[in-house]
Length: 506
Ligand code: ME8
Image 1: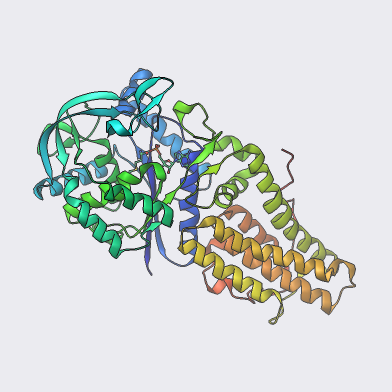
Image 2 (image 1 turned 90 degrees about the vertical axis):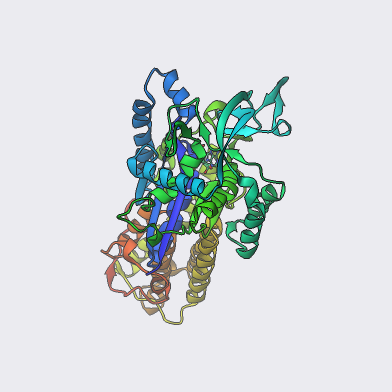
């Protein structure tokens, strides 16, 4: 059995979970559910990023200690992921001791390698990004100079004696590594941006602060606490036991995919691999770089006042309706524009009309013309080729971290089956072999659809599975076998049930 280890960013706990966080987390969930169907031994990790100035300030603002504040917000993320049916195997908090152990180990290795050195630094710092910016990266906002290009707020000037990670030494090594591993970063256009950052020249970055207490101390100089990104990135190793003499992190490492948004490419695709090279740890096998979900053309952010809470949306479209929209609407890597009207339109067309109608129609005709008992499919069904194409397309797309393509391939089988029913009109014919043959084919197609759609809409897939007569847990199906034509045995009781996706008006 091969292992498949996937991570999301660990989210800052200065705000509650929003649609943007849900976006990346749902993509990881669907991807890992697909790999569980393939029979892989999966570890899906998410968690929370709890140290640093930004969190300290958020705690101060509500009169709480940083620890008490993070203890309150972190469970809100865990709760949101439960509501959205996220099957993460682990949830890491950077305030846990397993994490602190791993950070100390990684820091010490980089220090021993001579890549961390003491220096003095004066620079313009954005607390929102926890990053220093150069003058030419700063922008003017409403006549105010020197603002962060992402948060659109003035940066602060900081003067500090810091330890520096000598990133500048890694330029050629990183370029060589990426040249030797084409396709490691997906999709290609985002990969090119990352390579551009390296080719643009790498500056050493500060990895410690003396002005801050809310963080992990450097093992060799405890007056300094670790810079939040050095701390945060290490979570991916901490969760698989790095630094713990009782565990071998290489059971899971190197990670298969770090899923991230395009806002944190520099840290994940430049800083992180350099840190790992310095520490003598293997580099990740892959990165999936998503675009932003925009609301009114702006990235969703607490400071932007345009935050959409995913839990409000599931009251209307259901958990699976929401998951489907997030996965299917926007090609991975591109920016998407969230709108409530868009959510409802996608729900009505793909879920209520295509999938919901197919399931209802099949059950209705089987009830009326087949005494409610599903007939077996024909070996030479005209739908068999459509099913094979759907599976191959979905498999290719999931392997490419392209959920919208995978679902489009899956939905091609739904469309083909609806067209097949319309061409044959079994509802107009007398019961008998001809009707049985068409309905057996349609049930088989629906069985395969429910397996292929499972990563995106797990509860709905299970419901269809049961309605066509299975009593097992659909998550136990294995690919590619379960996508092979002919798995529907016939002779099972088919039930209609309530509409899976009642039509909505916007
Ligand atoms: O950056 N559209 O945490 P964060 C799509 N703690 N995705 C979005 C989004 C949007 N509008 N807004 C956020 C941090 N995201 C660090 C990460 S990892 C070692 C440390 C998603 O809470 C996207 O995946 O700001 C983005 O990269 C991540 O949330 C940033 O979350």
